[in-house]
Length: 636
Image 1: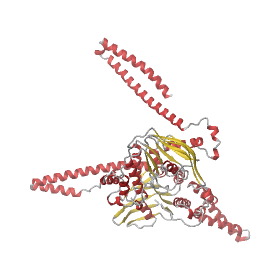
Image 2 (image 1 turned 135 degrees about the vertical axis):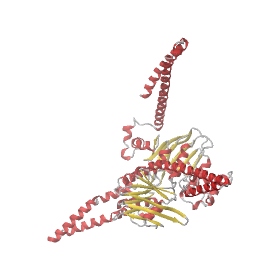
Image 3 (image 1 turned 60 degrees about the horizontal axis):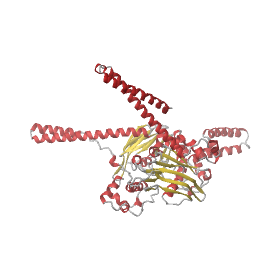
């Protein structure tokens, strides 16, 4: 065991965040710390790092072990470059290298015992230097920086010029290079693109130390962790396995707990009715029996009511008007900013009922496409056309659709003046705004709270074409799953940008990846995209290093329309095959029934009935021959 937390309790005023929380982390274990927003995850990490003092309990780190911590927000300052900042994590190796260089110079002038002593020190230092990978430390720093999404051209940028997200990536890289025995990571994937997240997954899975991760990225947790530590209403519980394993076990436990609670409540009501009835008899024996039952009732340990869906967001999206089949047509769309070309000559169509995810690395222009479609910014060239009866609902990650000077209540009432006060309060309550929360000014809300207001407006809009920019940002896992279910049952059309691979995998029917200034289409979810990424990128959007591949594979490539038609044909084949198999099964069953009937004495002695059955049997045989031939053709 490398870390042990025992009976940790912490309250802020009357709000008890942690209640006797206990858990442990084993050597080299990769664990997730999860719970809804405000559950106390970051608080617990700060207690472990001694940035906060618990009201009760203790944290024990194994002797002579080191610990590293990445907070959500970084305060890195100074004029050192990105590369030099990460080199600080290798200060011990740099000092060792400097001593080795000094010894090399000194040994040129030493003789006798002094030379022998210096050579022994040199041998010992170079051996230690080699063990600590000293000869490759610059390559290691470069590899980590590239893995976290920095280009070599950015290595010389000064820390003070970086954005908050870039500083977080620098801090993460610096932490990884220090190789502590246990790492605490608070939302490490927030500022990483998909390639960087995939790199970090591999790095952490192979990391020789232990890792404790706070994250809402379920795909990331599924890949990395082997244990889940849950904070639920202040209590901590451990689950073996990754996030998906936890989700299944948690669902079963929640259902069992709820049924136990209902059964206990039913039993309590029953006992109370019996006690009241016994007392009403007003006889000595019946009163004594009532008192006996009361004592037994007092000894019962009352179960807490489990948190049910009434403590979560309620989201139902339904278009008011059905659009035409052709929802959006984009032709020859191009956009670039000074010294930053984004995309060139994009062409694509979106049809009614599709849920299309746009993915790609940071800075490729995904959000820019959505802004062009919402006429927030103009394209450099090209155009787009909306189909018949298409009404857009827009959710932007910067929440420009909200008015910062208004209250939450005013934001809804001004946008939808026909709603009554009760109706507005009911809508806001569905998004967890109750009581005086509805009178909070928008500018005082957190990112997640603003996101919930935007979603509430979106729900009321009854749009039939939703355009969403990072809709899961700042949402906890429960809220993400509610949004996923709402989109999966939505009968309109959805186009969205997201880095949340689990969300994409559950909701997308098509993925468009923006890479090398082109769009590559994948008719399927995120798992399908991973399977086909290398192949289709080489065909449709080769980089400068493999542009010549176009000629060698041009004969075999399919356009997106052809690809979609091919998949539609395959789906029809599978459906026809299943129908044929069912038809064969039904006819074979009827054929057996006829054989049984003809063996019965009452039927065998009836010439008319035998003739009818023989004719039906012959027709079945003829149909079966046709179906067998069709099945063989479809199966091939």
